[in-house]
Length: 110
Image (cartoon, rainbow, N blue to C red; front, side):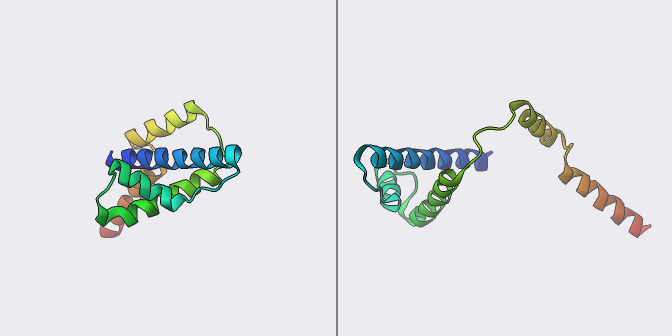
């Protein structure tokens, strides 16, 4: 669960940076130094301790680049709910591969 929450937090910060950059560009024809903004946000809010500042900057910048290059705006909610349900119940390709491997190993041992 922690990974999902961290991803959501990093995405929220990245989306904020995209909105900030767009606003500054549209309203003032200016440029935002994203690295500086990430540092200032961390100083203001204390997201991570100084020892983790470089990793924080790197992860937020990765999410920022992802958000900046994103082309897809939505996916089908019902399809995604089915995907989540299948992952919770083990009805997915990963589980199929594990089952196939277990069967192959069992057959090899007998």
